[in-house]
Image (tube, rainbow, N blue to C red; front, side, top):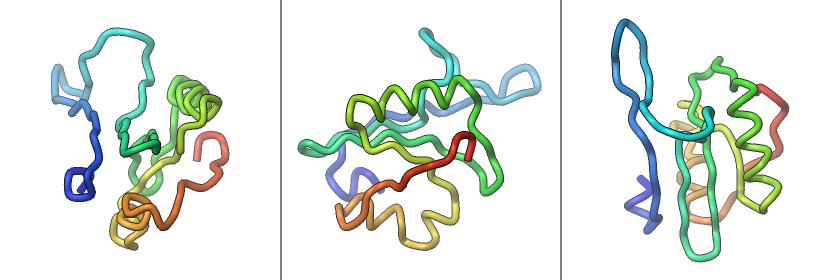
Amino acid sequence: MLDAFGWMWKHDRPGWSRGKWSTPLAGYPGFPDIVALKGQRLLVRELKTERGRTTELQEAWLEAWATVGADVDIWRPSDLSSGRVERILRGSETGVARQRGE
């Protein structure tokens, strides 16, 4: 969907290894799932299930991105089905304030 609305983006897909999901990468753990740019807009998103919670390391990254002015939020399946993701990508809505671990 990011492509359809003209965003440049990065997402590392996890893989199943040794009986668990993992995303092989180097650097500080907890990096967000999606980082996207369009014009002067910077979106940083963590992807979670409806009941999924962020870890402390994920929260540290999200707070750091918010500090430098990124539009930071958590996306859940209901955000896609409700049309919220599309509204954000079109620019008619921004991310909302989150509570820690939400």
